[in-house]
Length: 297
Image (cartoon, rainbow, N blue to C red):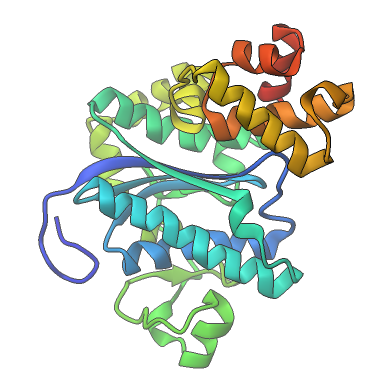
């Protein structure tokens, strides 16, 4: 396949997840969602990867990409963090949002996981109480489209000033083939490698719909968002809990209130990659309570 810079290269599929740590909200209004969608594609061009599908939610983002190697996929994820952090700081005056963002890129080593990545990504719209085909911040409309979309405008006709205003970048995007609608929103069909996504389902739309119906979001979330859980050494974990309790509340672990522990549990789950059982032991909570807290994070 051809890289954004014109070179030909062998590609491999990756699932990229970007999420706000704890309760950090990334997108607060339509402008934020729109900017994040555009930054996905701008960063893809900067890091020489291809976007297959994506979805932008209020506190997390999923992107299935094609990249030549793991390092390139990781660089793409980091570049999105960097660009959106700069935008967030400019708009909201918060300069440390970077530390509230986590980014990971997981190699999709089987065709089954590739199909699950595509289906799971698009099905996230259900969490927003929206049907998959009606959520406006995803690439759903790019896959198996029912017909051409009218009223689109090629970005090649935009002036440099218009590109800066609409895409929040000074990068030259005139040769991308992208199109925007009457609200200046990027048309996903013009920017995504939809044919690759369709080929994952043998170019069969009924196969695609079946996958949307049977994909287990809980299983996919554990793989794509949480990653594998690894039990830490108890001594190292206790040190992490103690250090965090001191930084957050200026208290020892024994001095933590129940409210303090409830706030700490999702954070420790995220940063330590350990199990709910070990977090429960470290904080002196019931395991079932920790499981509920990390599920609701």
